[in-house]
Length: 344
Image (cartoon, rainbow, N blue to C red):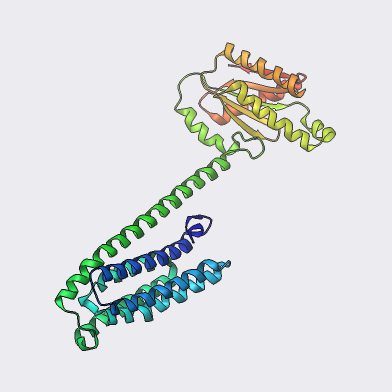
């Protein structure tokens, strides 16, 4: 039972049902204990003990079921019995409105709200409210069918059950609040993860082309020399054809790693295929040359590849700047490859 309550692999709705069973069992036990402590007749506890045994049996059957559909049926049947049979009987045999029945109605109402969803929840809530209203009207019109409860017994009943009810509501509210808080955080984390995935290249882990438009908006708000470095791998198709796509993928991953290693805070983007884009802030000529030399050396020594590319200063029009960088890239290829043309 404890395993299922703490295991968040089970849906919250299912664990909520089990939690309600547990709280009903604990609250019933507390009622019996309080009745004994205050000296109420043992006959008052018979109905609660029968109810306790019933819930324990239901809870045991519920946790033993492996299939979700069976657990759902057990939940539905048990709550229908509670609403349409057990609740009216407990209400009548306890003495009706002269006892602490109304607060327990509220507890059961909360349990229904958090244990069901959709049309079934609406049906059960409507039925429960209707039955409760009918019972209260019967209590007013036909008080003789209810056991007599003296003023003294009524006060004792309220005093003994009020703490139980308050504790039950508090525990129920705290547990539900904690679980919803966890689910909300989990949903937020999943949303952030999906957002990150949508902006990242699945193979290399760096940003993909979709991220460009967001980056462009950032660039428009930056001051200083912003440069774009567009390059691709020389004769990459030949690498795929001769060494296989697995080797090609390995090279693409390593190129992305080297980009991050050498260019650091600059934004690394896999533009498409074997084409990459670097967007840097405050690009100074000396800094560009130094990093570029280190990068090309690393590619040659580590992967035995060369690159061709173009580096240009961002002119406020991203598409135009990118077109110029692309033009420089192809000029570098025409000039014999293994070359990066810088126009900053």
